[in-house]
Image (cartoon, rainbow, N blue to C red; front, side, top):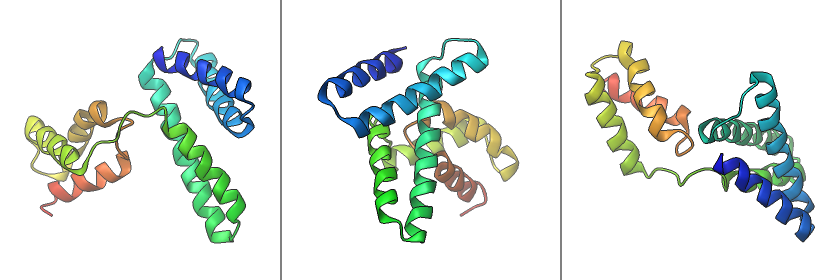
Length: 149
C-alpha cells in the first residue's frame, strides 16, 4: 500500500509543480495499477505494484531500442525519461556481488545440480530479487551456473 500512496502524493506534487511529462508518466502507472485492481477485483500490495512498474519499464526499454534503431532520437529520449521516472519506485538494485551470493544461496538451498532444477532456484530468487534485478539476466546467470559455466 505504501507505494500506491507514494505514487498518489507524487502525482499531486507533479500537478502543483506543473511537471507535465512527469505527471503523464505517473498517471500512466496509476492507471495500470487501477486497471489490474479492477481486473482482479482486489487491492494490490507493494509486490504487485513493483511487478507492474517493472513491466512498464521493460516496455519502455524495448520501445527506446526500437526508436534508436529507427533513428527517432526524440522518441527514444522520451522513453528513457519515462524509465527514469518509473525507476524511482523500484527498490535499490542488487550489486553484482549481492546477486552472486543470492544465486549461490538459492542453488544450495534447492540442492540444484542440473538445469532441470532451474525453476526451483528461480522461484527461491524471485522473492528477494524482484524489482532489484533484471530477472532475465538473473535467469541467464543461473542457467550458466547450473550448466557448469
